[in-house]
Image (cartoon, rainbow, N blue to C red; front, top):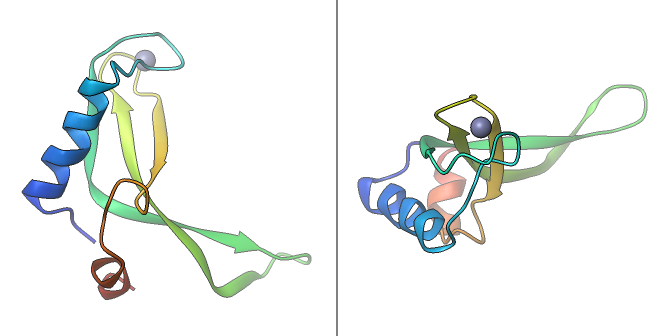
Length: 86
Ligand SMILES: [Zn+2]
C-alpha cells in the first residue's frame, strides 16, 4: 500500500521532531519510504501463520542505507486503509 502524501509528510515530521538518527552511523539524513510493508509470523516447520502480520513503514538512512521499521499503527495509518492493502 502506498502512503498518501499527507501520511508521508506526517511520518517525516515525526522523525524531525524527535531528532531521529540512524542507529548504524548516527546520520540525521533519514527518508521515509512511500509504502506500508508487512511482516508475517513464521510457525515451526517453516510455514507462515495466515492472517498474522503487522504493518510497518520503512525509514532509510541516506548515508549508509540502513533501514529501520516503524509501526504503521503507532504512526497513525488508519486500519481501514491498511486492510485495503491486503
Ligand atoms: Zn546510516
